[in-house]
Length: 257
Image (cartoon, rainbow, N blue to C red; front, side, top):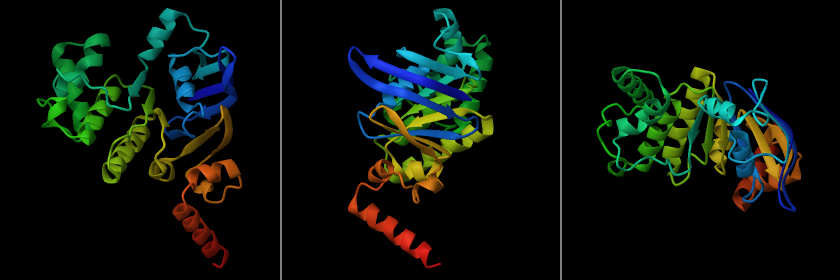
């Protein structure tokens, strides 16, 4: 579990995060949503230590990450897996070598054990048979699955995903969502996902944090969104006329049931 307490982040005189307190739960897909510029990417960067909060705490199972020494933070990051918006694979490495990369860097394992572990992770994302291919030889969806395999290679307690469905078609996005959701439950990981994808929000949003202009405006689960009275949230989720009409139809139908 990750707890955020009274988190502020300023850039000189610009206040980007304003007193955010929230909890990201184990074994659940925790989603951070909000408009571009709302502060959700800055929030994630503060969580993983790419930025230092102006004030506040980030507690990893009770351990204050902000207060840790540089060495302690390096050790802490070994408990984290990260999936970047662009997959961020090494083009000169094979699929297997990409998944082995964190193991080669940090795991005190024999070469045979590292290969075995990497193949286990590729099997988990249904990519056994592609280990000798290079990133340029596989599809965007397969690249994202390689990135997931690499992110779980070190058995992380915490998994951070920045727009994992970016650039993918709707069908492939659903595959990635289901994969992240099932891995989160299977390994009891605390998974945090930054996303604009409303299919992800409604499909795997077990704990959703809505950020607006640097503040946490709403927190809940996907099933509560349809009936939310938070105007900022509904304006964001149901931005198009089509979605507004769909929501009105659903609510009207429920009224007459």
